[in-house]
Image (tube, rainbow, N blue to C red):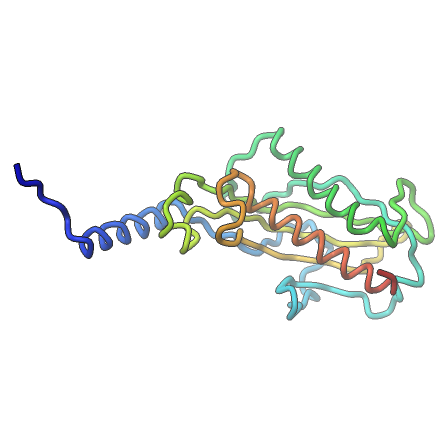
Length: 213
């Protein structure tokens, strides 16, 4: 019996059409948010190196004035303008703990991690404002993986303020999607990747201001 096989060119077209169809159904934007968590958004400027939007208080020498940082518990302040993906309390706790740990590891070399306010103490407050899970089954397909169909990500708003006066010293805002071939199968892998990136950028900025490495 003769078997009929689809020509390779036709099979490739079918796979491409399937991938794009899946992309239309499954891909969601990870975008900048303005939830009101930050005290202001108008003075944020894009940082050419990191791509994040950043504010630095021009009138304060942070490295000279501050030696301690309180890392406030990470919040989830979902932007009402963005359709939030369902994330349960356990996953929130895991991701918040992961981000806190990344921040602590990055900052503890140059700053004492404190738990009480004081004249030389900053408070780092942060909120995850949008989060999109990976869709692992889509990342099994090399075509959808190449175009990032199943990759998730997250959005963040964060700022450092004087622990006594509340004056803002630094602020960060960003939205970031996972990179291809990196953590594409774990549900929150791309979100963790974004959180690690943000913790690294914030620690780098503060460590540079301290003048020690």
